[in-house]
Length: 336
Image (tube, rainbow, N blue to C red):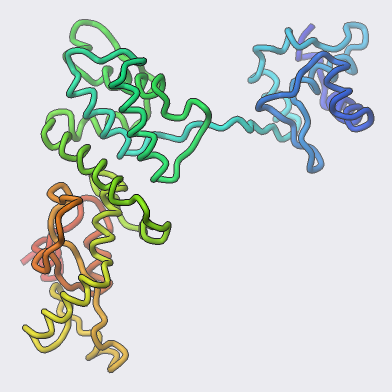
């Protein structure tokens, strides 16, 4: 018996039978259980894909009869492909673990580099603790997945993914796990030869994570700006400091006292001169300290901030790496 015997019309007959006798009776008749993931979507309803295909074989080949569960047990792709070819929609409702984000990869790579000579067993306290930290970061980033989401096994496998880039490991003819993502290599190339910077970035991510506890979604919301090399959580911490109303007001007062008006320190744009009273005091703040030098527990000084118009501020953050004030002003003056 073969799936090649099944036709689109036979599938439609099986779908009609399922509608007629009910899903539970249909599954029982053909010896299938409730599916965990693969379904056929038809006329706004979902049907168990494998059971439908098994029954459809009986309609297409009455002489051979329906296919049993055991015959379809390892045929997910073969079931899906003909159904899609015939125009049926096949969905997989199983939760898939999302791609690892830079923040998570930095924590994992820092652990790998620090345990370079001996990576602890996947059941060790060290791996469990790393899994807990990465899970916390992932949740803060709004990520979720299946029951295996960032568990000890998955985290350990990610550490093994890094081995394929490690010359000390591959130099002996060994290979690491090859099914990692593109982000693995990007983080390795950027940080592996700079362990101190890597460790500082990992510490900063955990500090940023701690600083987000108790904040509302709007307070952690990230505008559409390029992500800092240290990841999204650190970028959000940087942005919160720039958006602090208390700091912005204090910086405005100090700047007004020194200059008599408020204007962009990069291009000189003055909102009040351009828009009248409506623009009085209107300006944005930019935190000038490089992200990797931030300390989550330290207070931001007014000297760390500069006043920028919205255009200049967006240009600073438009692409990675972010521009320094010197680089921004150089662009404005044509590189002079």
